[in-house]
Image (cartoon, rainbow, N blue to C red; front, side, top):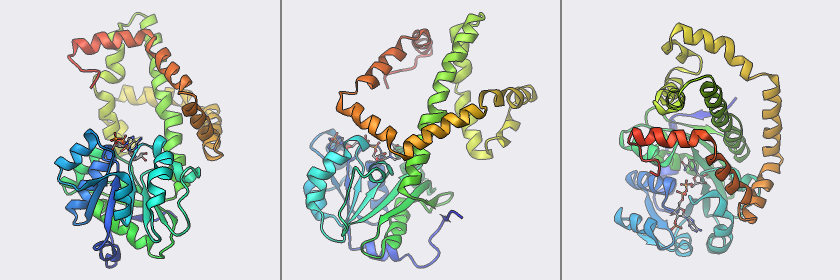
Length: 336
Ligand code: NDP
């Protein structure tokens, strides 16, 4: 049975352990900024490690002491690695690893690099994962509203023997346990699987199903604008997602007309047959056995040629030009 923690029931030993520690946030981007501000507001001693550029200026403006990554690691006991996953291995090996001391704790916000062994902290370093199911500004916004948020938490290596207390203390300082928040006790493997499988199944599929919808609707005489508005541009899709969050996947159907409900319940399953499950299983196994990670690493080593070309090719579809026209009409800034 999965352990889901919504509050710290016993005394908060992590808080006691962390009160004399320095928390170093490496990277002041999406997650780094929000996590740093939340933990500082909760009373922890937080410093920032970042190269000298606009992110650094932002951290200075927010009143943090900012150092280069090497010095921040030397000064810290708990080090959050909050830079993009693709560059973590290089930055970890060149700037973080040489500056760790026995008993330090590394915290990652995703399972990817540790699960695949791209980041290999030595045995005398504690390793944990606090992976928010939320974008950075969202967890800052909720903290300020005195609300919590969900995270997947895990321990990769417990050298000091007190990692669960430290993990819960950090979650508490981040604001996880405020109203409606929770920590799902998980693992680097599980986080990698559920995260990548989402991206590689329904999230990717929806983009290409929308393309097919556009083609069929316009071939049968619908205007491109009507088709695009119907799918996502009107904002109805975002409202449905919000209803799923509030009421549940199928319970939210009650917010649709009965005609819509009947159509969804009878035709929907035709698009999600057993062969789709087989395909999903194949992609899931390729996530777990490292086939996808190897492919993506090779792609990055070869100037991301396929990645760039796929972006280019997808701009050529007639739906793109129609979208630009519609968004201009609606006064939307697509570059934002
Ligand atoms: P960002 O892209 O926002 O990270 C930007 C930060 O990384 C900046 O401080 C930037 O500084 C620094 N950075 C970029 N390149 C380098 C480099 N070569 N060397 C050193 N620092 C660098 O990252 P995210 O916040 O999106 O992601 C951080 C972690 O959080 C990842 O593990 C991600 O999987 C996880 N995560 C992200 C979520 C999200 O909503 N984005 C959600 C949940 C988890 P500079 O430009 O100065 O180099």
